Length: 409
Image (tube, rainbow, N blue to C red; front, side, top):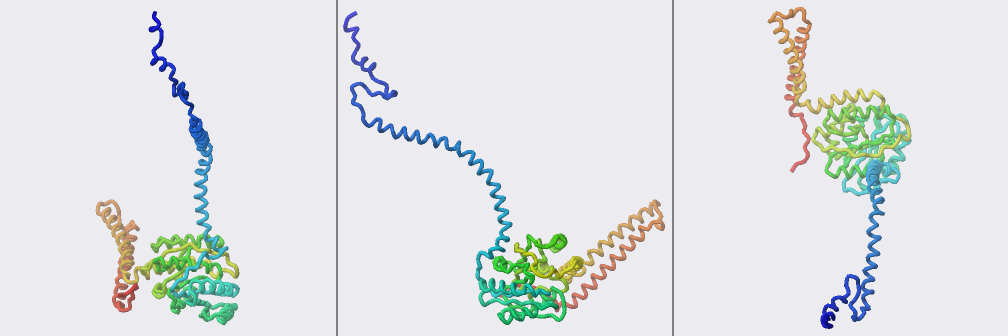
């Protein structure tokens, strides 16, 4: 073999000696790049810094799971905070007093509440001066008190002439007290509340704010009552029955703390024991009614003036309210419905017995059911007759009928 053949070509030798750039080696004879290590160093640092960040989600994963488990607990706590919100207001007072341009009249019927009147008057004065400066008055209705309630009110009146009082000679009841007060007040907004300090005056701004949303009557809802069970349990039953029969869904019809527009108190007629049904009466007159949860404190002085008989009277008054508001101008609709029902039952009963007698299946003289059918027909005819007489009376008194007018142009 010749030397020319054994000697490798210069091109091939250069290819064999060319280093691989993947290994990071530079070609032989090339000058060393001084900046190469410095350029790679930040990239290596970034990789090192990125490595713990890639591991961080794994470390935070238990924390995220704990946060997810804690979320429903936080939601529950928010609901509990919402329920306890009105309890917090009792300890620190209202958060803010928003002034109103309307005049306010507060009506307070009372019976033997001399111990609580001074404290109540001072708390009312503080609240009312902040929300309606020099545009408020308080009217006490002394429903025949036998203690020193009227003397205490006299001293309150001497200190501040905005506190007034009407005194009954004897006890006429809460409905009579409200009726007299409603005829006397002139404020654009009327607030009713009890005198036993169980109703909180700090709730008045919230009631007025709700009223200004477009409602005509805002009824308080004692969500958490500080009363014994023999008062709360029958009250729940009473409110449920009243809500179903009246067609307006409220949780507490008989709450003493309410806010009205003046048109409501001048339109609704309160008598007997009808003060329990003022929201229903207003609703049937076309006014917009709603409710708002309010604070209810335990009784501080004295005792409740209402006995167990109020529940029976309340049920009878509910029937009276329904009849006098819904059917007083169309009595035949009430008596005619029941009269027709009884008459149809009696007619169907006697018709069935007559068919059996015609087929020879029975002897009518031995069936007392025939007398029952005849009696039902007679009762039905009598009820329809009463309804017709009522219609004649209503027609003869058309000029005395009044209708609730909202506004005129």
